[in-house]
Image: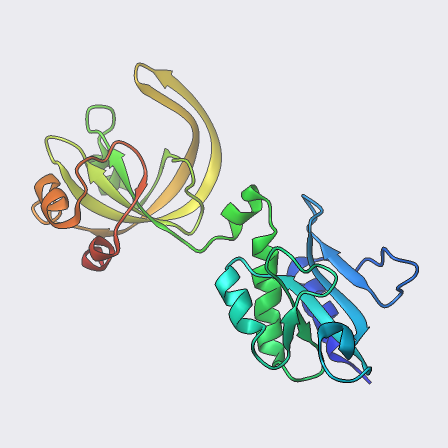
Length: 248
């Protein structure tokens, strides 16, 4: 009969292409899952007696150990039925989740995903983060962006640090325009390109697709400062929620 332990193994294998490891000969029922790059543990499945979790009885149960990024969330969860302070790893926001049906499998998958992100390398976290919105500058002195978007709705542009495929960029065109003119989707990043001239240094390009044009008198430099607290756009930067809503 298929168990919830089996379901967890199948979920991790399918989503993260990771097989269980069994590092302890004395505990053949203890399985761990590690990241492929930094080899950090992101989940473990063990069979332990309930009394070791602070629960009544000596019945052997399967548990899942996962790590939370938010210590407050960890503290809230362990107060609920089916959760306990992390067994075997009692520090660093680890929790144990009963695999006996007390906690819904959808929630278990959610906590596996949370733990995977909490223990990922910095590079992997960048890849896993949700799509983000940016304002990026375009200087007509160096490139005629307005003419470029008249010719095509996809162009290659200097890739800013932290930007990844799927992000949204709002193009601020510098003087004499001095306004946000374009909303674009980042289609591809990491396109090799080398350019060094004066103040312009380019190592990689990103491909961006035009989604929307704005009137040049709508999101001007003065409006960005007065309404949204943005007084300079010298490089890629995130945008406040109020401006995000207005741009949509």
